[in-house]
Image 1 (tube, helix red, strand yellow):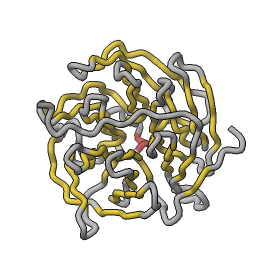
Image 2 (cartoon, one colour; image 1 turned 120 degrees about the vertical axis):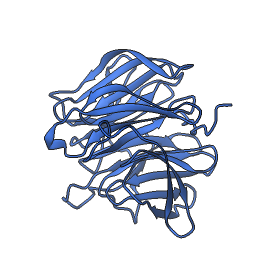
Image 3 (cartoon, one colour; image 1 turned 30 degrees about the vertical axis):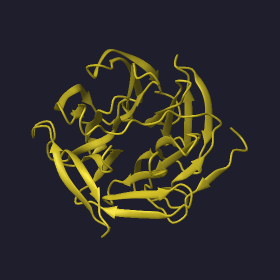
Image 4 (cartoon, one colour; image 1 turned 90 degrees about the horizontal axis):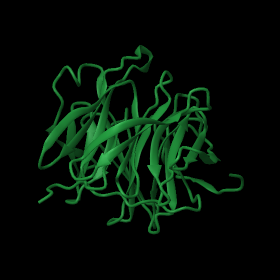
Length: 298
């Protein structure tokens, strides 16, 4: 889409920027830099920035109803409390057994479903090894950790839910996969079924990384290595492409008071320039509010 203003957030550079999320109560954005073990926060109105250091790599975060964050990290699902000292205190809530979260692995992409359950997947960090040992897990305060609900993943990504919560999306962004799947989703039990290919992006520019869904039910995916964010209709047709100033966009999220702003993180493979930047744009559509993690479903 030509002529769209794309604003770079000054003062931010990420080695692997990921997991943007909008906190409506605070009117603020959060995202992470995975290898830096850093959680970022930006006040939407003022643009004021803060960051916190975590004790291990933080791959994904979701806001919780009690003001903390729930996070997928190296050693499991954690609760993060952001302190005044610039440190993120971490309490492990749950973890898969060692064979499922072994050496060289960590959690990757994650977010809450529309009911406030936290979902995240694991991956083997050396993507060149192409080890399909990743799994997708569901965590809730009342029921604990379940999974792997989906197994055999190389690089889990692209988690999102339709506006009514009844369709779940999941991608594998590894160069050998480049696929997005859709599932029918049981909103009462939190169980996906009827897995089918939603997008086969082999042979196309970029790999389907992190994603978001808008109010029309369209799926927005970051084309990592393609320098694009792409919008696909619910029936899988490419509807729109927006060129970005960085080649490796990693995840996008809707936010702002009207949910009409898209924040996009990116990865810096060492090329400099705009790589690793975080940008804001207004694509002319409205997103869907994220459901905070429910510390209890009672």
